[in-house]
Length: 246
Image 1 (cartoon, one colour):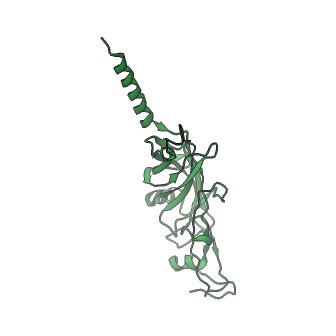
Image 2 (cartoon, one colour):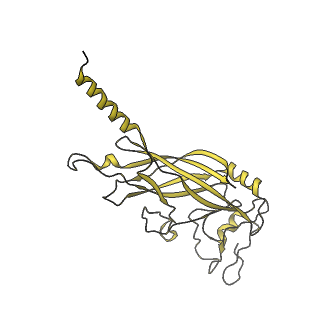
Image 3 (cartoon, rainbow, N blue to C red):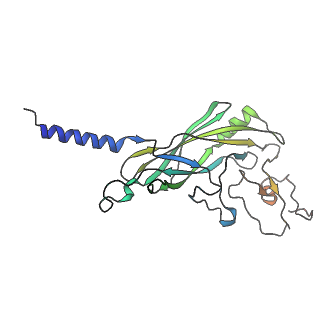
């Protein structure tokens, strides 16, 4: 005789196991690429109202690889009796990123990069947000392949590539989670062999002013020309009065 109670118990256990091990790619998502605040120690906050970067710039004459920070959202909500179920079970912890780099629609790099980041559960209809850095987003060998395929880059020239990112992690309740793909365009430029940087460089008021280093050297935002000159000896940097900064 079949023990119906045993069958029911096994069925419930199997259902619970599958619920805990399945991958959820609908409840977490990449929201945007936030811009670090250079006036505040380059801090990046998990705030969707902050300024965001829609396109990156990778100067291969100044940097060997490209990295980026992504803001992700957690739409999982606390379920059950709040007095008995702690919200930590729906908190998301990211640990890895799947990355593909495309040139003219063709994949030239496909790899996994370690990452981290935590996002609290959603508050009713408002997602919880976290920050996750992917380093590298374009590794050195991929940068070399881009230059070989589209370069060498001269002044004013470069190539657009697309970095496709999926963040993977789990909840503290044991649920595997993954974001959908997020495509981020990056303009690759600069020529290390001819010492030709392409990142924007601004002149300080005076060569004696304190140097304000870029948040991420060799990428995205214009740099103090003195910082560029430290790496590229052939780059001429003058202050606002025309004095040559050495």
